[in-house]
Image 1 (cartoon, protein in one colour):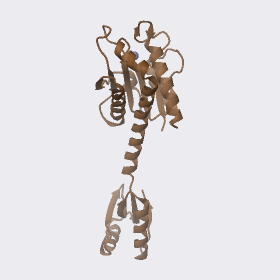
Image 2 (cartoon, rainbow, N blue to C red):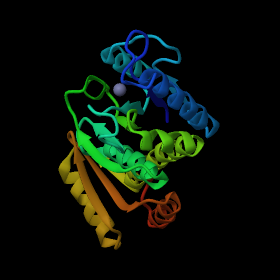
Image 3 (cartoon, rainbow, N blue to C red):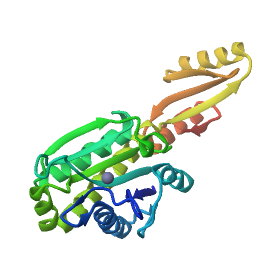
Image 4 (tube, rainbow, N blue to C red):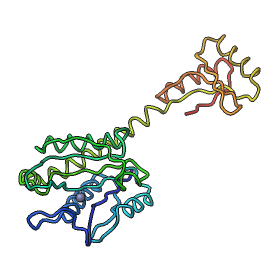
Amino acid sequence: MLHSLAPPHGGEDNGAVFQGVREKDENLRIVLALGRELENRGIPVYYTRTTDVFQTPFEKAQIANQTGADFFLSIHRNSGVNPGEYSGVESLVYEKSGPALELAENINGALGEIGFKEIGVFAEPEIAVLRRTEMPAVLAEIGFINSEEDNRILEENFDEIVKSLADAVEGTISEEQIQAQAVRTYRVQVGTFREKNRASQLVERVKAEGFPVILDADQGIYRIQVGSYQELENAVTMERLLRRRGFSTLITD
Ligand SMILES: [Zn+2]
């Protein structure tokens, strides 16, 4: 499972600036620390930039697409019109569904526990890095750069924040893997036919022996299968029973 990290802004684009602190530097500092933490946990990371260079959001999306990463995460610091007016973390996604929403909620929740106000997750389909990326993408705003409260939380808990972001990423990845595995089931196949009559005859024979038989038709092929198991072991047990009754078998997933 690969992860693409995109520090926003860079080069001539400073992002938000407050009291001499430039957002582009803040973003890169957080991203490099997070990347190191993820790599230590065995999660490979691609960066759209690791130095102070300018890229358009479209270029960032293109770089990510070329890596084939499974997630895209862009880390910003937010900025209010007036200093101190707003504070808290928010995450933006293309649409509020699927793995991107899950990652966004995990990030907000993790940072909320550290003490940031949780503003929420919002759908922003017009943002280029969300629209142009081919993988689930999240743009996370790690507090407001012109909120003294947010800056204090960030400085006092920097290492913990990096670990929490990594936990959010790692948690989302393992949740996705568990879901992918749950969908995978094993069946014991006792025959395939192009003719429906012959398939039906075998279905009747299997049924007569008392097995839970399924007739699966796909693109003109009839597959006769028995059971549906998440554990390979259980499919093997069923296969043994079927063979004992004289059926020829094959385990499929
Ligand atoms: Zn920004």
